[in-house]
Amino acid sequence: MTDSAHTPRAIGLLLYTGALLGAGLPLGKLASGAGVPPLVWAMVISAGAAGVLVPVLVVQRRFALPRGRMLRYAAISGTLSFAAVNALLFWVIPHVGAGYAGLMFALSPVATLAVTALAGLATPPRLGIIGIGLGLAGAALVALTRGGAIGTDGAGGLGWAVLGFALPAILAIGNVYRTLDWPEGAHPAALAAWSHIFALLALGLLQLALTGDVPLERLHAVPHLVLPQMLVAGLTFPAYFALQRAGGPVLLSQIGYVAAAVGLAAGTVLLGEVYAPLTWAGAAVVAIGIALTIRAQLSPAPEVPRRAPSAGCA
Image (cartoon, rainbow, N blue to C red; front, side, top):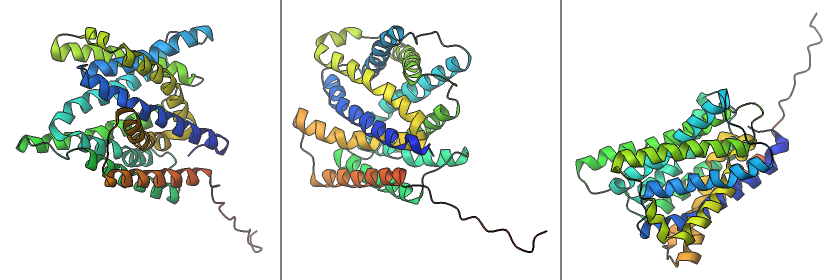
């Protein structure tokens, strides 16, 4: 799956990236409560990632306009993995509920595992697959005890519920694509910056097409949320792309499990939220699944015994 020398680094990146994503969840909830449209907040995240990374790349003399394969990579990655996922998520949630949407995100590692196998890439050992399964079970329990499963808009609700399955599919395809088409010699921070620049453009155009307006003035009321979110995004996505390179698509897909567990703790500490015992039980199952995945990553690959040549062979 990954070079063994990269495994400890990949695990560190998994925990770091997932923790940052989880810590940022309360900021998005507070912004939504203050009337910031979801797509505009997604633009804040992409603007933050690009706004923090571009100056750093300039200082490091790594900033350059993308060309050829890097241009294609940034355009597809930004549009598919960030803009399309956020847009679909915000369309689906009002019809199926936040809990169901969370369950669809929990399916991402399973979907990524399937797409990885279809693409002919290396898959985790058995212990890692068990860890993914436990993470899925725990994340499903967290999602379904935090919000309603399916909305109540009649027969149309079933259609939205089916559409929700596009979320893990898009995430899985994006995870595998970024591994297969990684531009040779490209720096993770540069890929993160340009991917989010394309995502920012796509989100802005989508917001404009849907509503005829991009109400950035709503952000004036929440600078105390905007600035921390931009900083968190700038710290998150270089590590996200580095994790993609070091850990591969299946390990990367499990940042959602880490983010879910950290998000519960952040919601409790920062927002005073109270969760049901079953929700915390789900978080504990997620933690066990992550621990098994880490154990599988650290375990040496089993050696295949070589058969001694037959004495009778000519």
